Amino acid sequence: MAVRDPLRVMCVDDNHDVADSEVLLLQVSGFDAQACYNGADALATVESFQPDVCLIDLHMPGMDGDVLALRLRAFAFGYSPMLIAVTAMGDPVHRMASFDLHWVKPVDPVVMIRILQRVRNSRLEDTRL
Image (cartoon, rainbow, N blue to C red; front, side):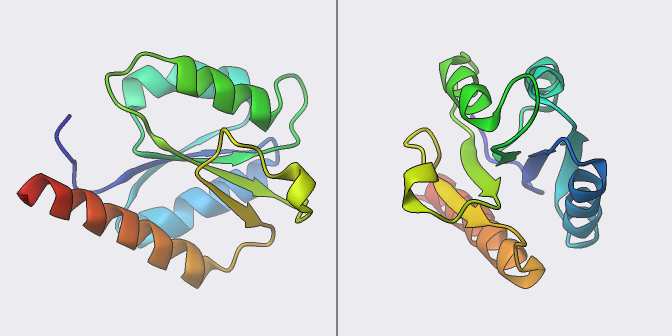
């Protein structure tokens, strides 16, 4: 799959303010971002949006972030989006193998942008090789 510019980021959090704030921050920073407020919405959106990165809250009602991550990993897109757990739980017990990274809330917005810029840049560099 060709690397797109800007990087597409799906923000999944049952707290609408958190998801919407992440989306706004990412959009003003040059990313293409979309909010989903639960796991079912994320699964319904993922095929049409085709995110490069998914920021996923772990503790959501209905389908929690761990189950969503496992379902996204099983989804046959032809590529694998980077999955980042975003949680208030900093304990290593809560670090699930289905995620590429784990961020503890509140996530420093400067750090979030820098890491996502590095992801974008590394994917662009990989296509140039």
